[in-house]
Amino acid sequence: GAGVSQSPSNKVTEKGKDVELRCDPISGHTALYWYRQSLGQGLEFLIYFQGNSAPDKSGLPSDRFSAERTGGSVSTLTIQRTQQEDSAVYLCASSLDISGYTFGSGTRLTVV
Amino acid sequence: DAKTTQPNSMESNEEEPVHLPCNHSTISGTDYIHWYRQLPSQGPEYVIHGLTSNVNNRMASLAIAEDRKSSTLILHRATLRDAAVYYCILKSGNTPLVFGKGTRLSVIA
Image 1 (tube, rainbow over the protein chains, first blue to last red):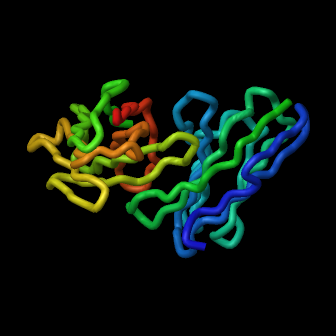
Image 2 (image 1 turned 30 degrees about the vertical axis):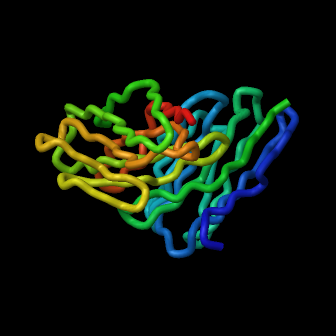
């Protein structure tokens, strides 16, 4: 497709369960970013992948959060032992060098 | 990170021009000025970016002050679909975008 694809679009999970969120970036984009946005709040940076370099994990809120990017393309954000405060929209973006980011539509995660 | 200051909210009438201001008095020489917008229930959308010269694209114009300490995003003719939160962000090199609170633009029919 032409855009950034995220799945699932919605996810409801029980507190304490693990979840995996997927991001399929635009083909050829070397950089991939994860952000989250809690209800009524701004966007919070989580993690950033650039080519084959080590990811910038400085925004991950706890060690329950991890992400990987396989083959320089698809990325998976994993949240272990989910908590209610993890409820948010998780947004993925990709970009080519210093060009503008293209964001996906996000995954709305609800922890009950 | 260099910071930007934007009004919390602005209002515009439909079909009129809108000037969205942004102050960035601590901008460094390598910082690009980026603008994004986020429509309700959607992810952010790239609008425009520039370094020193004014920029135009199909969505908007970006006017950058000569000293680069402020900039203005110009929507030439606001429509109801332009109602969104507009973010002004300074970005240098490969550092990730850091979003502030932005300006919530309301467009009145």
